[in-house]
Image 1 (cartoon, rainbow, N blue to C red):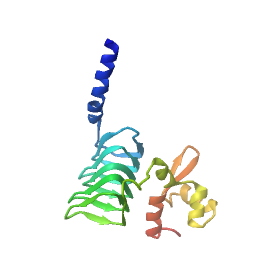
Image 2 (cartoon, rainbow, N blue to C red):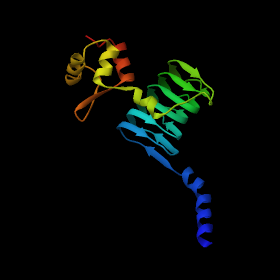
Image 3 (tube, one colour):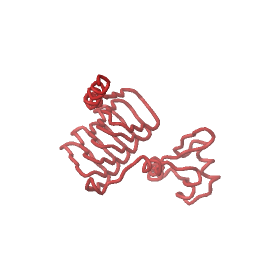
Image 4 (cartoon, rainbow, N blue to C red):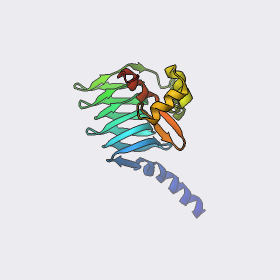
Length: 190
C-alpha cells in the first residue's frame, strides 16, 4: 500500500516537474534540436539548423536564428530567417524581425515588428506537423540536382568548392532547402 501511495504522489508531482523543464541557450549553435517532451526553450544567441519543439519556445531579442521552426507556443523577439510553424500560437514582439513563411492558428504581431513572408492561418484540428515535415526540408545531392534541374556532378562540385550552402554528414552532403532558396534568390547560381 505504501508503494501505491508513493507512486500516486509521484504522479501528482510529474506535471509540476514538467513545468520546470527550462533550457536557456545563450551561445552559438548549429544543428538540429528536436524535443519530444514539453520544454520551455529560450534562445538568446545564434542558432543555425532546424528546431522541432514541444512546449514554449522564445527567441530572445538579441538572438539570430537561421532555421525552420516547428513548435507549439512560439514568441519571437529577435531575428529569424526561416519558416515558422506553430500548432498553438505565434507572437512577434516589437523587436522581432522574421523573414519566412508562417503557419499557425493564432498570430499576434506587435507594432514595430518586421515580417516578410506569407502567412497561412489554420485551425488546430487541421494542422498536422511533425519532424517528418522538417526532414523534407533537407535534401540529398540527387534531390537537390532534381530540384535545381542540373546533374548531380554539378551539385557535388559546387558543394566541394563551397559555392553552394551545404553540410557534410559523414561521407554524404546535405542541403537545407530554405538556405538553397535564399541562395537561388541571391542569384549566386553560375
